[in-house]
Image (tube, rainbow, N blue to C red):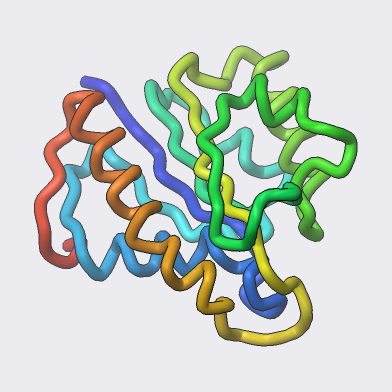
Length: 163
């Protein structure tokens, strides 16, 4: 049976940096998925990301990315595209560890072929617990993306809170 991981990463103490975690928490409030889909609030997961990838056929990650696009814009990237992003990479306290973890997972044979990252452009990364209005508006887009990716991979997704 296929297994999937959806994970939001980020630092909730730095405003928009916590976008991925906010998305995952909202996903858990609004959707039910089968036990084969692991839903994880990854926080500043860093290098331990590789442990979550074991025996997964599909991984969907949500985070922020440094980009010149307007705040609230987003990109969907493969792991390879993330690794080849300009040296700034993800603008967060876990940026290097995340990329290193992906490289380690690939080297160790743990990274699944189906791996995508929903990366939103933040407005502010200063201390604070709230998302900017631009990223608040991007949450429904990220939720819809997660739902569509899971369904297209053959996983059952229902409206309603996770069990």
